[in-house]
Length: 396
View 1 (cartoon, rainbow, N blue to C red):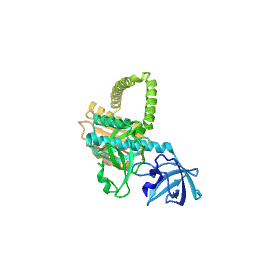
View 2: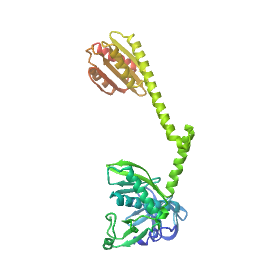
View 3: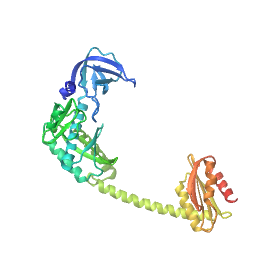
View 4: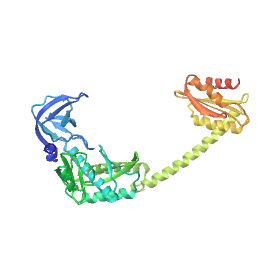
């Protein structure tokens, strides 16, 4: 029976002895053993498996398959009939803190706002719950976090109880049960009653603290990222290191980092604006230089490592300066060959026909209209050769 498993009998148990029932190799070539009982919690219900050792051999994964708990070992090993197991307590207790914290935060959202949780995931660094709403206010997040920490600070007992399906009618369960036999309830009296197969501490105080870190939209639901217990300290340590480093880089006190960043962003925006103005001035100068080299009504040029956006801007400047001009610009960029072809308002050349003729030669794609087109494709030729082809097509 489930309740006879060591990890349910005593969640604080970290060592045990058991008899080897069988061993084998799964379809992914992972060696495993099955014991007559175990303190290793298998992955399930959003909670990851325990780790530890069996006779000193590392247990990498634990899964329940067809009612059997498979302990996957780091290497194939012939274990004796009697096995000694040791649980990684740091990992076990961390999972206990996070899972119990999830119960409390979920119950807080229900109690305060009637918002249900539809899924839960206990990750390596953070825990997430998906709330069954499309929007959640910052004030609601703050209130739920505050209520959760109140329950934690009150150090309420966390009880577990095995009941029959009929007996569940005596409890105000938070959500519908997923099973009808061997039902295990996790109860925080007068606050939360929930069917759960995970591991939890004996009291809420052992959770320590709960902190919501962020939210995101996930398929029209709201995913809440949070941490509990020792993970709060880890997050605080990490964020403090980042803040300290930012303070040094900005030559500002930690309390002034935000103001220093805002000043830096404003300065950067001003510099970017000034740079764009200088670029536009250079393009205007370049456009006039190119116009002075116009031949037979066509301005042509071939460039290396120049963006198609620059070609577009330069082409528009050229046709604005001279309405009778036809512009042919190409650029070779790594493995791509790109071009822009444009005409002034006084020209009747068909740039769309140019693209239709040229793009197949590049195995490329493009778009535009009769006055302005751009495209690109494979470097099947050089930029000068491409410009020659476009000019030749226009001369037909």
